[in-house]
Image 1 (cartoon, rainbow, N blue to C red):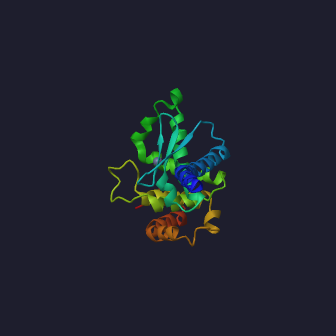
Image 2 (image 1 turned 180 degrees about the horizontal axis):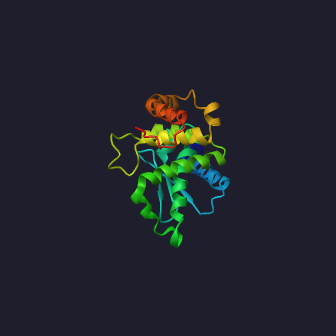
Image 3 (image 1 turned 60 degrees about the vertical axis):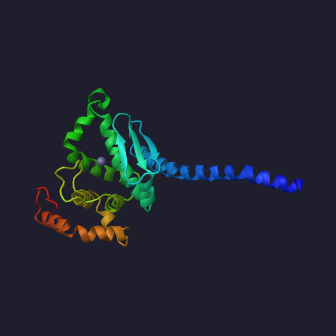
Length: 226
Ligand SMILES: [Zn+2]
């Protein structure tokens, strides 16, 4: 009898402990991947600014944001659930790191860098292109940025009232940047069988045609993407 009471007591005391351990381990997994990928990009690119990564748990939308005041990059945990490989997480982090770098540059340690957001669309294009460079330097596949954005970024009808350019325009601009600067990733395309990438190829058909025409005509004019 004593043995049974002891066993029951042991069960009562050990169950919550076990539950807590599991919870802590699950929460730690996201922080680990975000830190690993984030610091890999920072170090490979020799970024001289202190940047911190936080995981925002129980988030509904897959997203990430950079706080210009303190260089913190908040990564929503649902972003990790939605992405399929490390390259995709790297794509989104590289974009945010690019913002964080911008926030540190300029006079007074970038104190007035928030003014850049007045021209936020150019700011986004710039962050996307620099993200591609960061990814390549850190040995990640830059096409993953296209895959990740195609997967998580919504597409509005017009971009007039949004701080971000239309996702289709962003994707086409990233594609053009990779096409011109890092064509090897398109020749040996690791994402060619990826469903999300194939969806991008279908939805970007007209934009890619416009890019092809520009290249054929050897023009320097900016392509007008849809
Ligand atoms: Zn951005």
